[in-house]
Length: 154
Image (cartoon, rainbow, N blue to C red; front, side, top):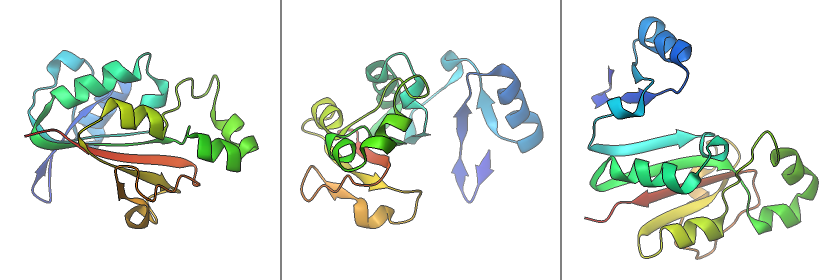
């Protein structure tokens, strides 16, 4: 799909949904991960990683599809200890069968140690700029979504 100068390739595990994206929405979508051909400038996922069997493997795959200097951007429900403490009832509605894997700041800091990592918490895309911090300086994790962006080393 070419839009505003960007070429987009989407991955959808559901073949019927993938077909719908291709036929009805005009999206370059694939249902088999082996069909994804990089390198890409950006890999983006929103509310996907909390559902996969292995977050580690999914992130490794996405990083592998990026060109050096490319960005991996993700949004997922906030599994941080800060959010858990501040919003105990909300956290327990997010976690469990509906979201078996919740990402948190500690996992991301360990996974992407030494890389250019930005993260924060958001409630929708409003306030994304105010939440974005480098590393863990001034990290504010009180909102229900965890946002992160990590740059693949050059």
